[in-house]
Image (cartoon, rainbow, N blue to C red; front, side):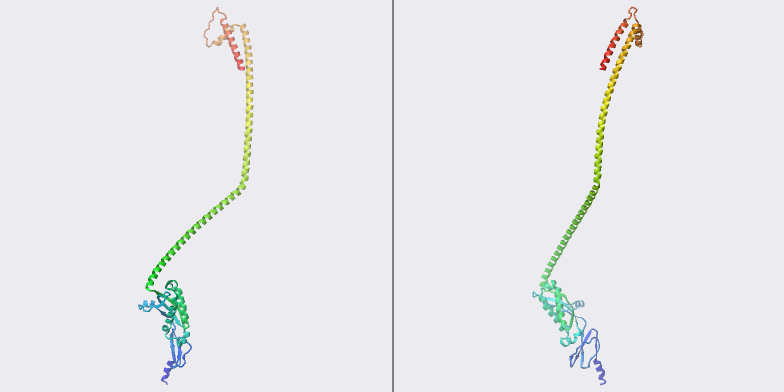
Length: 377
């Protein structure tokens, strides 16, 4: 018994490593409730033993995984499902899950082991095979791929949660299409891409047209604003001019009135000047006529006085000559002395020359008196 004691003690001590969890299984009672977490635990030796479960995140993968490609061991088959058209699709799926430590007693007592081979693959395959037939190949491949993944993730999560397995992520990595369909889909996708490209280009052109229209509208609005601004400026200028005219009009009216008054004054001055000039001309003409009249009267008086004087003189001279006949010779000699150098008078022709001269003088006096009378007239 002393020799078996250490063996019994060692059998009673169980060590649960990190990342693992255990559940006690009794030979008499079966799976016992409760979970043994990492650490040292005491169990009944020979009557109980501990079943360990991996509580780390585990990955279930269908198809060729990236890890296999990296290691060069590309193994694994894709999950084959049928689409709505009846075509077979190969799905490369990755499910990341974890065993819930709280439900290890239920898992140990009710589920087949190991879970990663017996439960998870079947649940994942069933969920995808039930879901994908509701969609066409094109929907699964492109248009509704994310929707299909989300619905499959929800189905897998609910089913495995009932078995104590927590699903953290479901990834749809790749879809293998049938060869014929892949060619047709590729051509169709190329056409769709071309259509999308043309749609994008059309949209870009439409946006460019809209941008051009917006620029035109902006330019139009700017021109309208500028025209409105110019009109407002003109209105303000017109108002300013109108306000200024309110003050300028009285000044202009006063200036006009002043100009009228000045024009009337100039007109009055001109009229009065013309009247004065006319009166002056009349006065001048009257004065001139009076002057001429006076001059004529003076000239007539002068002629009359001269004639009287000449007559008186001639009368006196005649008396003197009668008294002194020799004076005639003296006077003639005085008047002709500058032209006559020698005068000879015959002794027997006494007074013949004097008689001729007297007759000539009387004739000249009568002619001069007739001329003076004609000038007076």
